[in-house]
Amino acid sequence: MSKFDHIRPYYDTEVNAALREIAHDPMMKAIMNFTFPGMEDQEWVDRLSRTHSIRDFQINFIYPALNMVLKSSSKGLTTSGFDNLDEHTAYLFISNHRDIILDTSLLNYNLYNHNLMMTTSAIGDNLIKKPFLMAMSRLTRNFIVQRGLPARDLLLSSRLLSEYINNSLFHENRSVWMAQREGRTKDGNDATHKGVLKMLGMAKGDLSEMEYYKSMKIVPVSISYEYDPTDALKMPELLARSRAEKYVKEKNEDFINVLTGLMGQKKRIHFHAGTVLHEEIDEIVSQHSSANKQIQALCDTIDASIVSNYKLWPTNYIAHDLMNEGNQFAEFYSKEEKEEFVDRMNKGINIDDPQIVNNFLAMYANPVINQMSAVVQ
Image (cartoon, rainbow, N blue to C red; front, side):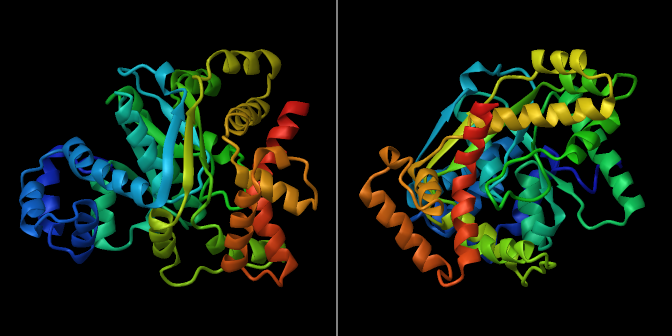
């Protein structure tokens, strides 16, 4: 027994049995029928029965599924920065987080396309309560982050996560993906939470925190969707937050967000892999003696990379101009693009509520505002 057994992905020796167990689940049938239209069910069942590793499952089933998702719900995926990474090196990818499943799935899709090592990736246990979803997450090399724990249990869970990530990077030479914060960014303001870095640092051993972060080879990743397919679904939580009210999720809300994120229209998508934070960490150490200030400075450095390399689309500029009742960025979009965006907003939200309209526009406009602020600084 391993201390990581209740949070780790499957070992390759466990993959075939897990696939056989879920091969006839209605959700697997739906996924495979979508991925391989026209293929007889028995053929993909037989293929699953001959699959014995996570990599084979990812390449032969998940990769084609993502191709179909991109074909049916996007106008294409572009990348930058990945050519600067080394195929034999394990990295800690820290990204902004907009979509529950697609962010990490498309990161691995891009890594595979660039002949780079795919990641083990964090996923909240609130998203995989159903046995089928738990199995699928472990089959796609996710490790489980436990949510909603009491303080003492949270500390133990955080330490275990830190040790698992350490083991992946330094003993298995396996890249790791984590979001820069718990949960998805819903207001367009991408910010790294200190708690994420503090959790990572729990397994530092005899190293200082900054030495340890440097050894992890942190790569900030900027993820940008022209349309957020779940934009309207995020409005109730933003509205509650603006009113200082506690937000309670509806039953199956996470699952609905997963499906909408996968199948909803995204238009263009861009992923940018930043450079490894080496010199930046050295500079932080030279400028700050306090460990707390060093961690905050590293958060700020990750944020600066994600924000500055975030691909701004016409939707971002349109939202900024609409929110400010101006045309400052009119050169970056067409009349037709603006009409399409306004039509989407009108159909997706209650436009009679000024707060909801403002929240919707701010979600798209804030990346523009943040890039402008970064340039000024």
